Amino acid sequence: MYQYIQLDFSAGVGRLTLNRPDKRNALKREFIAEIHAGIHQLQSNPDLRVLVLAGNGSVFCAGMDLSEMQQRAESSSGKAEWQKDSEVYCELLTALFELQVPTIAVAAGPVLAGGLGLVLACDILLASENVFFLLPEPLRGITAAMVTPLLIHRVGPGPAAFMLLSGERINASAARQFNLCHEVVVAADFDARVETLIASVLTGSKSALAMTKQHMRKCLPTDLVSQIKASVKISAEARETPDAREGLAAFLEKRKPYWQTER
Image (cartoon, rainbow, N blue to C red):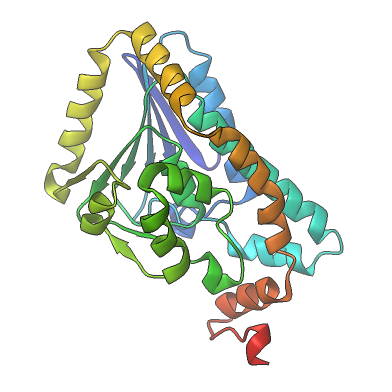
């Protein structure tokens, strides 16, 4: 049924696994749509108690498919297509964030760019000790606009500024210090710890957990969903700039980008 994801449901646990390992689980539009459809399918099951988001392959998710973005840049309808791409990604993040059951992201490999938005939209993030996190968007001439509200919500403005602006990798240990992930687990124990956590969540009342999630959202100082939706315009506009076109071309051509100020 699905080309880019795997779905499994058993004993109240829905598992959605990103399954484009040959492309490091890079998010093209059809892939994003499948993840959203998979969430909807699991959510429609009245027996769903917890959703687990994982990724096949050595990389959890490399972010957006830059080859597809380059095709948009070369298209006469690029502006409209970029707007649509941003809207589809926004719809996925909000669907994941607003899910009524607890959500657990399990990162056994690196998490980059738009992939970080996926794990931040989940309630709990477990990371293997060998994982790193990276927001390379400015290195490509674009922005991590829709990831930004979720990141600030999770780690606060200080650590978020470092991640958004530095272009440096954040290893699992630093991510734990930033409160980006909730727990860092030795690789050999990772799968067992995931199952232990799932079992612990399942001991809670389904209705109580749903009410807790709803109450947590109401207690937020800002409307996070509105902030994500407002970021769609910024995300799309950033992809239209000359630096965005140069950054994407440079990445695909495996060379250093030359920004406007350097020309």
